[in-house]
Image 1: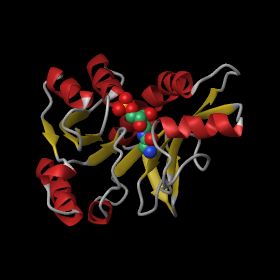
Image 2: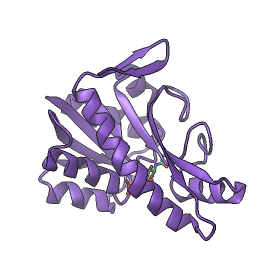
Image 3: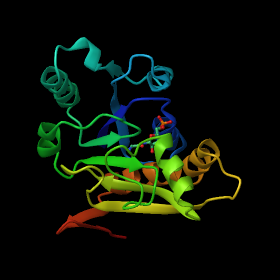
Length: 208
Ligand code: GAR
């Protein structure tokens, strides 16, 4: 059984896709042992509660400084003792300590085809605003392992999505979620749970 902790900041639709994948049997041998959220008002915490999953809020507002917040975040993960940490719309820079302790065991979903529209400042709707401003015709989503850079870790899976002429950032975000994010994030977790994902020299391969 792959024990996962899912870290979230907002509405939690990617969390929901994982919950549904487990419930419907498209994600095997996986258990969400804890949801960690940095934002007490996030809809994602409600989704965890509804699914009967422990939700823990670690908000920077409850800590005197960044170091104390990061230490609490690391503790919240370690207490749950996961095999894999999934960043599903977690808009916090992950503490380096956590990245080092969980090397090749943290994955992230990003709403573009990395290396486009990623890195510092590119998150949520901003990614889609930038894609539309550049006039790209294809965008998509990427699941990757998390290293110490921003969106620079080894790519596990990507899925392309068409941009329409009349798209707004919101309509594009919705299509990228529906056609790509909610598909590839649960899929990657299932592959990892099945032991089919290998990393060698910074490259990922998926075995049969
Ligand atoms: C998702 O689109 C996710 O890819 C993005 O935030 C959104 C969260 O939505 N993440 C990033 O931009 C990370 N750089 P959700 O809370 O409904 O899953």
